[in-house]
Image (cartoon, rainbow, N blue to C red; front, side, top):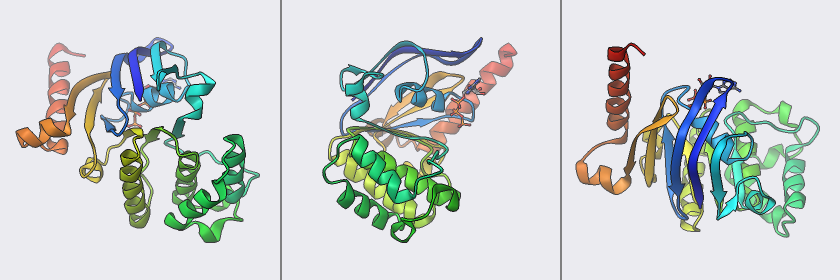
Length: 241
Ligand SMILES: Nc1ncnc2c1ncn2[C@@H]1O[C@H](COP(=O)(O)OP(=O)(O)OP(=O)(O)O)[C@@H](O)[C@H]1O
């Protein structure tokens, strides 16, 4: 479970996240949508424990920067950052040992098969294409089977097979009870499995919908995105922001 309470993040004087509060429950896939620069990566990085912020973030009831929280948290960043001197199989071994996983080899083999990386085990990260690096980054995040998962734009750059596998994996992980927060611009790609969506604008939430609300009103996520973002922009133009 992710609990974000009154989180504000400034870069210098610039307000990137403005008093955000929200929860992602076990078994929920929550989407963060919003235009470029809205503040999606910033809140994800804050939850991952990579930024200083005002407010409080709890992971399964523990402060997000505590070791207990970090043990249950998986973070797949927007841009893959692999270790230059490790092969991609050594990345799996490193994480397996760091998390003291007894079954890391079987899990890593399974993930590599699903993401078509099995014949690349001996390659170094910088010998791989951007999409392949993204797949390794996803495998790194998923290997410890975390109860809380943060995905920053995970679908960008993946080929159709990898997108299909990742979507299937997300649903499997959700069914196992994980809380998943995923930022994306590809709203049609998440339409089958999202549970809640927050639309961000200028560091704030401009709208929040659950799947039930959207189904009941006949709204569609993409249409809603344009309605919300265009109306906020219109208001800003009127007041000359
Ligand atoms: N390290 C930083 N220093 C200063 N400003 C930053 C920094 N990182 C992000 N920002 C600013 O904070 C705002 C929010 O950025 P963020 O990366 O969170 O947006 P985003 O919604 O993830 O955008 P995108 O959809 O383009 O990935 C932007 O205006 C960005 O320029």
